[in-house]
Amino acid sequence: MSDTSSLHDVLPGGFSGAPPGRRRAGRQQRKRRKQRRRRTTTVLLVSLVVAGGGVYGAYLAISPIVERLTEPKDYAGPGSGEVLVVIPEGASGRVMAQELADKGVVKTPVAFIDAVAADKRGAGIQPGNYNLKLEMSAAGALDILADPANRIVAKVTIPEGTRLADALNVIAKKLDLDPKELRAAAESGDIGLPKAAKGNLEGFLYPATYEFGPDVTAESALAQMVKRGQQTYDKLGIPDNKLRKVVIEASLLEAEAGTEQYMGKVARVIENRVQSGMNLQFDSTVSYATGKFNVTTTPQDRESNSPYNTYKFPGLPAGPISNPGEAALAAALNPTPGKWKFFVTTNPDTGETKFANDFAQHQVYVKEFQAWLQANPGN
Image (tube, rainbow, N blue to C red; front, side, top):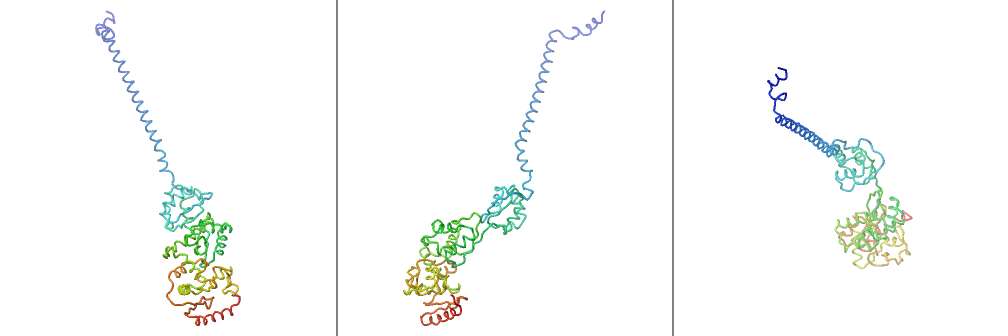
């Protein structure tokens, strides 16, 4: 018996150990198992790829957020270039921070807010115009803003009782404005004048100290001064229908009262003389009409036909003769009670003024004034 025969005896059916039909079925099962393994591997690979793609997509989505959270929120250096920043009146720290960020001064509003929170000087930042650097640190920006000396302002002071022509000269010089443009603006009617002004700025250019930024114009400067006057009228409670009268009388007080302490009494003299039909006979009104500034006037001056000549015409002058301040306005609105009809400043150097109910007593005081004139020629 051969070796092959013995194998057949051990494994019936030959080498396969199975009939031909079963062999085919086995091969098909093995093939299906391989296919299932390949599909499983493919699904796993696809799942891994999809999962990997999702992670990558998520990374792409959040990476800007991560960068924003991790990147510095402030510039480190002193900055470069120059940019004008305007801090508005009453601006909060957040408003300032946003303005600085918008202008490219600080990197983020948060950087400046943090700097202000850590430095008590932040509470003292004044409104105004400032020159700052581009891309500077928030602390550096605060250093500049916290120092009032860094504010870009031009100050203009108009003293009480200043005539309009003189005030315009001061404004033009201090703000480097064209005098012609300033006069044109004063006459334009576009500066917020109240109706009581009748289109004339004299008397309604409120005397005070003003600050202006580099972008000031003739119109904006005058409008600000007129607005300040309106705020004062409202504060004092001057009715619109009395405003012109009060301003005219107040302008006379600035010229005639000498000092603030006499304004109420001089206002009463004006009221008493006008109500009794007496001419005011104020040299200040004649000086205004003639364009002079002397303490006294000449007989020729007093013959002027100007409606401002209170020697020649009864009642108040045609309009204000200067720009009065708050004290004069308050006195004109509420004169001191009394019967005085005469007064004279006996010493213009000190402003000493004396009041009388009758002409005889007044003449005594006039002689004191004349004695001062002799001692001070040229006035």
